[in-house]
Image 1: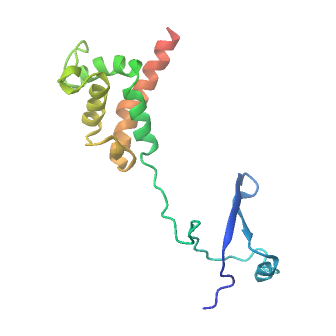
Image 2: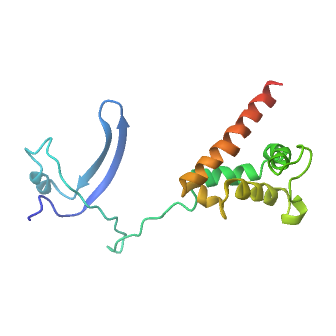
Image 3: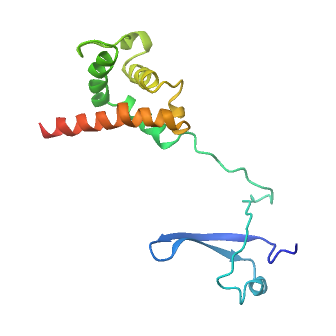
Length: 160
Protein backbone atom coordinates (compact mmCIF):
# COMPACT_ATOMS: atom_id res chain seq x y z
CA UNK A 1 0.00 0.00 0.00
CA UNK A 2 1.33 3.42 -0.95
CA UNK A 3 0.77 6.12 1.69
CA UNK A 4 -1.03 9.30 0.63
CA UNK A 5 1.47 11.32 2.66
CA UNK A 6 4.65 10.45 4.46
CA UNK A 7 6.63 13.17 6.13
CA UNK A 8 7.06 15.42 9.10
CA UNK A 9 4.25 17.64 10.38
CA UNK A 10 4.07 20.17 13.19
CA UNK A 11 1.18 20.22 15.64
CA UNK A 12 -0.24 23.75 15.62
CA UNK A 13 -3.42 23.74 17.68
CA UNK A 14 -6.52 21.88 18.74
CA UNK A 15 -10.16 22.79 19.26
CA UNK A 16 -13.31 21.14 20.49
CA UNK A 17 -16.64 22.73 19.61
CA UNK A 18 -20.24 21.58 19.58
CA UNK A 19 -20.53 22.15 15.82
CA UNK A 20 -17.16 20.93 14.53
CA UNK A 21 -16.18 18.38 17.19
CA UNK A 22 -12.61 17.67 18.23
CA UNK A 23 -10.02 18.86 15.73
CA UNK A 24 -6.30 19.29 15.40
CA UNK A 25 -4.35 21.39 12.92
CA UNK A 26 -1.05 20.12 11.61
CA UNK A 27 1.39 22.23 9.64
CA UNK A 28 3.24 20.75 6.68
CA UNK A 29 6.90 21.48 6.02
CA UNK A 30 6.22 23.14 2.63
CA UNK A 31 3.39 23.88 0.20
CA UNK A 32 4.31 21.04 -2.18
CA UNK A 33 3.25 18.51 0.47
CA UNK A 34 -0.24 20.04 0.48
CA UNK A 35 -0.90 18.59 -2.99
CA UNK A 36 -1.33 15.13 -1.44
CA UNK A 37 -4.54 16.41 0.20
CA UNK A 38 -6.02 18.73 -2.44
CA UNK A 39 -9.36 17.39 -3.64
CA UNK A 40 -9.66 14.89 -0.80
CA UNK A 41 -11.83 16.97 1.52
CA UNK A 42 -14.12 14.74 3.57
CA UNK A 43 -12.01 11.62 2.92
CA UNK A 44 -10.88 9.50 5.84
CA UNK A 45 -7.23 8.76 6.51
CA UNK A 46 -5.43 6.51 8.95
CA UNK A 47 -2.57 8.23 10.73
CA UNK A 48 0.25 7.22 13.02
CA UNK A 49 2.02 10.15 14.65
CA UNK A 50 5.16 9.88 16.76
CA UNK A 51 6.60 12.95 18.49
CA UNK A 52 10.25 13.50 17.64
CA UNK A 53 12.77 15.46 19.66
CA UNK A 54 15.36 17.98 18.53
CA UNK A 55 17.75 15.09 17.96
CA UNK A 56 15.27 13.59 15.42
CA UNK A 57 14.58 10.53 17.60
CA UNK A 58 11.15 9.50 18.94
CA UNK A 59 10.11 10.96 22.29
CA UNK A 60 8.47 8.59 24.75
CA UNK A 61 5.08 9.96 25.83
CA UNK A 62 4.99 11.01 29.48
CA UNK A 63 2.29 9.24 31.41
CA UNK A 64 0.69 11.21 34.21
CA UNK A 65 2.21 10.22 37.53
CA UNK A 66 -1.20 10.05 39.18
CA UNK A 67 -4.73 10.09 37.91
CA UNK A 68 -7.52 12.45 38.98
CA UNK A 69 -8.97 10.26 41.76
CA UNK A 70 -5.56 9.60 43.27
CA UNK A 71 -4.77 13.30 43.08
CA UNK A 72 -8.04 14.17 44.82
CA UNK A 73 -7.44 11.55 47.52
CA UNK A 74 -3.92 12.90 48.15
CA UNK A 75 -5.27 16.46 48.38
CA UNK A 76 -8.03 15.44 50.80
CA UNK A 77 -5.60 13.55 53.03
CA UNK A 78 -3.88 16.88 53.69
CA UNK A 79 -7.15 18.59 54.60
CA UNK A 80 -8.19 19.23 58.20
CA UNK A 81 -11.86 19.04 57.09
CA UNK A 82 -11.32 15.57 55.64
CA UNK A 83 -9.64 14.41 58.86
CA UNK A 84 -12.59 15.76 60.83
CA UNK A 85 -14.97 13.74 58.62
CA UNK A 86 -12.79 10.60 58.58
CA UNK A 87 -12.56 10.22 62.35
CA UNK A 88 -16.22 9.37 63.09
CA UNK A 89 -16.78 7.78 59.67
CA UNK A 90 -13.92 5.34 60.15
CA UNK A 91 -15.05 4.52 63.67
CA UNK A 92 -18.61 3.80 62.53
CA UNK A 93 -17.35 1.70 59.64
CA UNK A 94 -15.33 -0.37 62.11
CA UNK A 95 -18.46 -0.90 64.25
CA UNK A 96 -17.97 1.92 66.74
CA UNK A 97 -20.34 4.67 67.78
CA UNK A 98 -18.67 7.37 65.70
CA UNK A 99 -16.69 8.95 68.52
CA UNK A 100 -13.33 7.21 68.11
CA UNK A 101 -10.54 6.77 65.59
CA UNK A 102 -11.49 3.38 64.18
CA UNK A 103 -8.97 0.59 64.59
CA UNK A 104 -5.92 2.82 64.10
CA UNK A 105 -4.62 5.90 65.87
CA UNK A 106 -2.98 8.61 63.69
CA UNK A 107 0.24 8.33 65.71
CA UNK A 108 0.44 4.60 64.89
CA UNK A 109 0.53 5.27 61.13
CA UNK A 110 2.60 8.47 61.00
CA UNK A 111 0.19 11.32 61.69
CA UNK A 112 -3.09 12.74 60.45
CA UNK A 113 -2.30 12.64 56.73
CA UNK A 114 -1.14 9.02 56.95
CA UNK A 115 -4.26 8.20 58.99
CA UNK A 116 -6.52 9.59 56.25
CA UNK A 117 -4.52 7.66 53.65
CA UNK A 118 -4.91 4.49 55.73
CA UNK A 119 -8.68 5.03 55.87
CA UNK A 120 -8.94 5.43 52.07
CA UNK A 121 -6.83 2.33 51.44
CA UNK A 122 -8.86 0.25 53.89
CA UNK A 123 -12.27 1.58 52.81
CA UNK A 124 -11.55 1.18 49.09
CA UNK A 125 -9.72 -2.14 49.54
CA UNK A 126 -6.59 -0.98 47.70
CA UNK A 127 -2.88 -0.97 48.48
CA UNK A 128 -2.23 2.40 46.83
CA UNK A 129 -4.38 5.44 46.04
CA UNK A 130 -3.18 5.09 42.44
CA UNK A 131 -5.45 2.05 42.15
CA UNK A 132 -8.47 4.37 42.42
CA UNK A 133 -7.78 5.38 38.80
CA UNK A 134 -6.96 1.86 37.60
CA UNK A 135 -9.75 -0.25 39.08
CA UNK A 136 -13.43 0.39 38.39
CA UNK A 137 -14.38 -1.39 41.60
CA UNK A 138 -11.99 0.75 43.66
CA UNK A 139 -13.23 3.92 41.93
CA UNK A 140 -16.84 2.93 42.66
CA UNK A 141 -16.00 2.33 46.34
CA UNK A 142 -14.21 5.69 46.48
CA UNK A 143 -17.19 7.51 44.95
CA UNK A 144 -19.85 5.71 47.00
CA UNK A 145 -18.11 5.36 50.36
CA UNK A 146 -15.91 8.45 50.47
CA UNK A 147 -16.43 11.10 47.79
CA UNK A 148 -20.21 11.36 47.87
CA UNK A 149 -20.60 11.12 51.68
CA UNK A 150 -17.74 13.54 52.30
CA UNK A 151 -19.02 16.17 49.85
CA UNK A 152 -22.52 15.82 51.34
CA UNK A 153 -21.03 16.30 54.82
CA UNK A 154 -19.15 19.40 53.63
CA UNK A 155 -22.34 20.79 52.11
CA UNK A 156 -24.36 20.25 55.30
CA UNK A 157 -21.56 21.77 57.36
CA UNK A 158 -21.45 24.92 55.24
CA UNK A 159 -25.23 25.32 55.51
CA UNK A 160 -25.10 25.20 59.30
